[in-house]
Length: 179
Image (cartoon, rainbow, N blue to C red; front, side):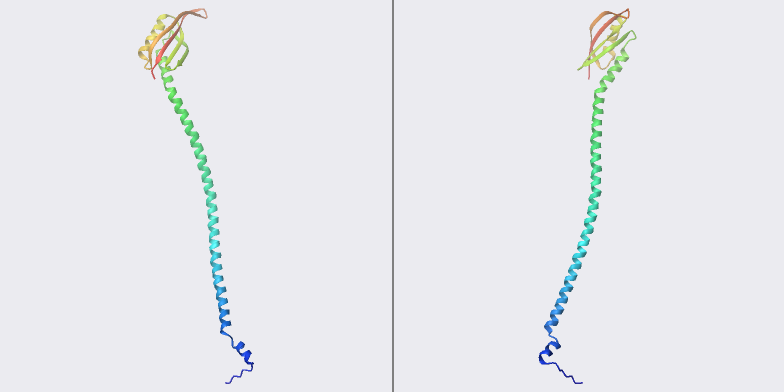
């Protein structure tokens, strides 16, 4: 078969295709393909990072609630520690008076009653009434011998008194308390 090209010479070069033009077209298509792949990679990476940001924000909210709970527990712990400290202080200061009151109760004869008890430092002042001087003496003797926390029992005052027209002995005793 015979081919006849009827195009003028200038038109033949354009119709037959210039390899440079075809190469530039393929280069442009390749560049577009590379840019498309890069866009796809960056887009998928961005969506992955957005997912991480969302999960991190959820984790931050969860940890904020945990931090609030920890703060509440710390405040409650501080309050409880303060209460324990107060209770320990009360127990420490209470042990001597409780034992002392028990010793006074154990050694108090029937004919003697106390109307005032005061303690300053290690000095205990007992004021009360008795029917007789012997009752006061028995009370002082029992305190000195049998009360483990009391030392040096001294009679300060013993005087005649009358309560509701009944003659009584009013007394004041000072004791040294061992702590």
